[in-house]
Image (cartoon, rainbow, N blue to C red; front, side, top):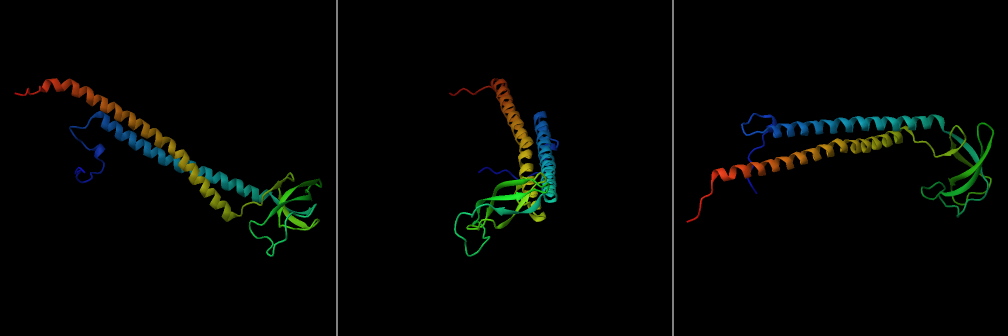
Length: 194
């Protein structure tokens, strides 16, 4: 392992007679890519989280619980602990929407629930079945997760773009070194053996 010496902060912007214009350009590309990555990630994550939280709040405000009747007995045997997580089955239910129209559909109920028993279901303003809306705590968690995922996904675009640009600049710099070496190597002369 080669000795590199102590780390010098902001070395890309320090004055140095050996520093080329490409080194300064690469420093600005690196700074711009990181700034864009941070800015795009934060803004897109914040916007996505806000949109999700707003939509979930709208659902809480407009979706309503209704009582429905099972049209047939639910499949399965009744368990000792009704309502236990994972023990629910699909069953046909009938309900009346707030506008007076009659609807049928399927909801999850306890196994073995008798026909014509009442169940709670959730509907949107048009009377269509929906899932129970997320409470404010669940909404904050969902919004935060979506915001983090959206922020990371959007931040990847300027990050990858900066990496590709720096890779291209590196290839160009290596090609320039090869050209300079080919030009100056004959001027230095080679010692002939013997």
